[in-house]
Length: 112
Length: 115
Image 1 (cartoon, rainbow over the protein chains, first blue to last red):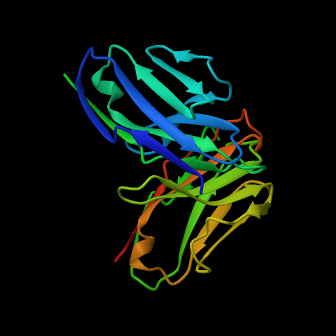
Image 2 (cartoon, rainbow over the protein chains, first blue to last red):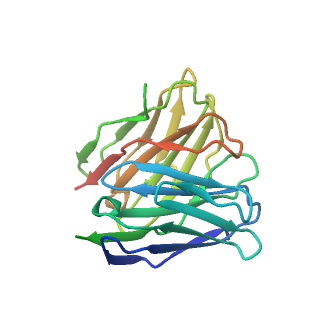
């Protein structure tokens, strides 16, 4: 059965800290891995990764994929209170539909 | 529209009633997905539309759940004879195509509460 596992499930840090969120997966037909940030309502798209070893970066956030070891990490440097959210990892392991399999999410709380 | 729009944002109904949830995808997006997010659980896939057809309905939990899409745009998810375990946030997402390289963009969801 295809599955995606995130760790830790929750994390509390102080502003300015650096955090690393983990996502491991087991799927039959890997196509892509996506990271989303969910605050109050809609998950918002952060990154899509399809190739190993190529870092995607956006401001203080970055992510990388290891297709050999079947995991991805999401790094956030110099955290701010606005980074507090649930971070969702999802994998497209479909053959032709694009349906996503989600992990449980990591709840990040950044304290002032 | 600018983003995926869902309505209603909240729905409270009595057990046994039917409910209809609506999703208006981003203009031009041909792929549309429904997911369900229950308390303490990750997002769970329900159904996928490409245009007006639904080639993957594998996530629908029972025959009380159905969905349709018309005009390659708006989709409705219908739950008949609602049960308390149907309480969840129902999220809709759309993308330009189903192929890899096209991320899904989500609406704010409908929070469904069954009394």
